[in-house]
Amino acid sequence: MKCQNCGLDLLQGAVGCPRCGVSVVASVMPPGAGPYPPPDPSAGPPASPPSAWSAWQPGLQQRPAAPVEPVWQAGQPVEPGVLTAGQGQPAGGSQQQPNPTMVQAAPPALPPAPASRKSLIRAGVVLALVLALGGGGWWFIDWQNRSVYGPDQVALSYLTAFQEGDLAKAVGIATPKTTPGASEVLLDPKVASTSPARITDVKVVHTTITGDTATLDTTYSLAGEPHTLTLTAVKDGKQKFVFDKWRLEPPTLATVVLAKPVGLTTTVNGQAFTPDESKTGYALMPGTYEFTAQSTKYLAGDKQSVTVAFADPEAAPRQLGFNITITDALVGEVRAQVAAKLTQCAVDTTAVLSAPANGCPFYILATSSTGPQALNDIAPGTMRWSVETQPQIEVHRAADGAITFTTVTSGKRTYKATSKDGSSEWSGYGPLVISGTVQVSGDQVTLTYS
Image 1 (tube, one colour):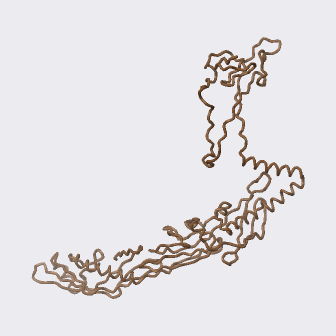
Image 2 (cartoon, one colour; image 1 turned 45 degrees about the vertical axis):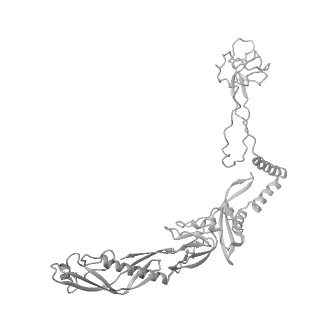
Image 3 (cartoon, rainbow, N blue to C red; image 1 turned 90 degrees about the vertical axis):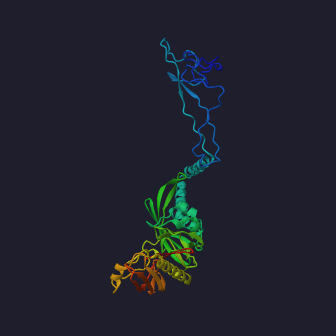
């Protein structure tokens, strides 16, 4: 017997075509005219869509799609393979019943993955024990919730992870909070894991459970100093079907306020650290941290060490400041640049000026006895300046890190010029005073003149 739609050879008594799905008792249709196009015999089985987990689990083997079998309906439910000619008509009547129609059944669910099967098996064992033990089973669950799955165990696991230096595990349990506005650059594992001190002697000393909220009083030590920490946990559903699941509210990390060491490279526990340009507060994991401003040719650095526990809500952030000092080499460099600047100014200033220009203090005082006359009578292009003595310069570093230079003893400048009619010579002198700011970047020193 052949399928009237696609021509496939059928077994005797078959109720439908396994290739195209057309019922044997359906009305005769020419090949290809059925509700489903005939399959391409040369095409292989349809490929199943890629699993959404394949991107997360590259080694996950995709299971082939299970074959889909049709379910037949012809007025009444009929089991496949039992439907025979004549069925579907009422007894004693000649009214023709509609042809049987094919309804595509939903594909069967894939069997659970091995990990899921293990979880289901464990859950089934637990449920079986509970049912077998009756009241004793519920006592067992209560005992497990208190001794294994209680909020105190979550808190203890959290603090123990810090004690063991497993910061990834600690963050996985509860990601610590930071003070609003604090920089998180030092929470990088490369820095956070370098602390030579860890918290020790972790204990949960008291637990209070009110409804779905637990308050946990804990203690720990850090660098020999005892500390207390109050944690909060919230019940967050069930795990393994019957045991409580608690979610730990993260504690807040301590913040250290660090003054940026202008012009110096900074390290934290030996790790390179670029201070945040927009923030001065830095969140830190519990531990000990040594901040070092490394010395250069022109600036003498400093070290500051700090040990921080979890944040105390009633305590102000720790303040750290570097005691950076300037070196004799910087003072000598600034004085040399000032002297070179004044010498060049004397050459470049050929105009008749009554005020400094371009940082060059070469001008005629209009308030002097001969100043007004000289300013009006000197011929353009005839002004010649000289530096008789250089000013004495001192360099200072302010508390905010700004470096400035000032004149503590003025030098002397002199000039000569020709009158407009060429009949006489003008000459004069004045104090030589200069000041400005200093920028140091490594071995580079840049002066800005006031």
